[in-house]
Amino acid sequence: MPEQILKSTFGYDTFRPGQAEVVAALLDGDHALAVMPTGSGKSLCFQIPALMKGGLTIVVSPLVALMEDQVAALKLAGVAADTINSARDRDVNVASWKRAQSGETRLLYLAPERLMTDRMLDAISRLPVTLIAIDEAHCVSRWGPSFRPDYEALMRLQNVFAGVPIVALTATADETTQDDIAAKLFGGAGRRFVSGFDRPNIRLSVAMRTDAKSQLLETVKAYEGESGIVYCLSRAKVEKMTQFLNDNGVRALPYHAGMSAEARSSNQTAFMMDNGGIVMVATIAFGMGIDKPDVRFVCHTDMPGSVEAYYQEIGRAGRDGKSALAHMIYGMDDLRMRRMFIEQEDSAPDHKRREHKRLNALISYCESPECRRHALLTYFGEANEGKDGCDNCDICLDPPEMIDGTETAQKLLSASIQSGQMYGQAHLIDIVRGANTEKIRSTGHDQVSSYGTGADISKDEWRSVVRQLVAAGFLRLDVAGHGGLSLTDKGQLLMRDEQAFKYRKDIIKQSGAKPKRKSVKAAPENLNAEQVDLLGRLKAKRNELARGRNVPAYVIFSDRSLEDMAFHQPQDEEAFADIHGVGEAKLKKFAEVFLKVIGGSTEFVSDSASGS
Image (cartoon, rainbow, N blue to C red):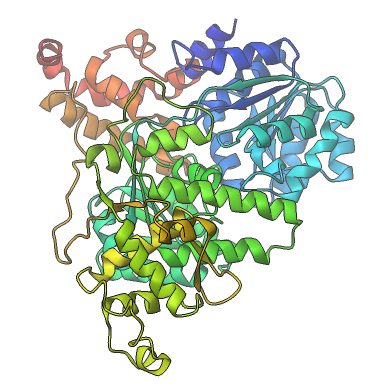
């Protein structure tokens, strides 16, 4: 029975929502597509069928570091797992292959580019393959945000391994992408399981860019001593922001494609092995498949390219189910840059139209005056019916003031018309604010009727108005040119008083204001002082064991397991076996060493019982 393996191997009493159904489908021999939120336990959906079916399960995974961590975790759980990858010496890979050939290995992890060589396919097809699992399956689809040609080549698997069930797993796929994945990997057949997209523990927030560096530092300092990821659009910005954070007392490491493979690997390993305090500053080259559970924040210093990309990236936060933050800083230049990227793509017009629509959806999310979580879930077809808000986004926690901005907007649109609809945001704001610049004088724009009509509105508020006019479709950005703004048909209606405009008043924080600090390291509420002290010693022992095995600490035991130990304080192996995450293999490997740590706290057992 799947439940028996769940308990005996992995130490869990019950399946999480959505897992059991996928397991059952694979045991029935069906193909399956599983769309499940990050951190919901997608791996167990194929690991348990792999153990029950016997034979060999092939697992396709995009990152060497992820493969290594998953294999290490499975081995500690007593599962015969292995990987063949480019980071290992040839003799190590040869030994792994021989174990697979001999039938010793149950799960073999491979990158798609290694698997899809004719030589490897021919060799594996001679083995008793009973299941194929494809992680990060959205990479198969050209409609998705992370398309990879090596993944598209996986289409051949259904023919090479006819009759072998294939499971595709992803956290990020809208309906179009789901259809594409199913069509490519198993000819549209198979069963589809969509467990939902909501990550209620992640607080969502978006801020207009005023001073990107100070805004970033405020966010990072609020999570001092915690792990976090900062995404930047360019390699140069990654380096600049990394230096800035280090100069301000934050331990930050860079990660981008311009670095050597060795440097990237070293920084990623340091981040994954760290127990808190390292901030990874990266381009989108970093993150796919990152399984670190205690990332407390993900901060975007630039707008991503789509809602799917954004959702994928913020999904690296709070995988342990504890509170985390997803914060984005963006401005008008992001809109132009993203439009330009789409236009410069070597792709068909239909693809470009779809990408512009994806970007429009993200802009709407950023400018939403209502619950961000509702906007995000609605995009994925999962509106939270019956709920007015989520109480965990900036809009719900601090509702914005909505202002009738029709007259204000008309001043800006007039400035655009009177200056020939060819100038960008900065110059138009200078016109309405009555600025005395060389450009204003040389163009004669100090003589137009709109000059100085908006002097009572600050520059920052004008930037917010312009951004929202663009987002709402009143103004069009000249992507090919230099960011010139011109009126759309909707903008013309606004000028004729046939359309109204309301805008959200952005709250601009005063520079030098102290950031609100969050108590992110607060002890679990169900533990008393003595138990908290024990939890610290259990974590220290876990870190020592992890260093000795050169694996991340969570591979030994999750924080939840250690909290369970601190609360129940088992005194023998039988009681230790009931701890969350303790299967038979970990019971043998770790019971004695952790019981010794707990034994030093026996005098607190009676207190903890009464304090619970």
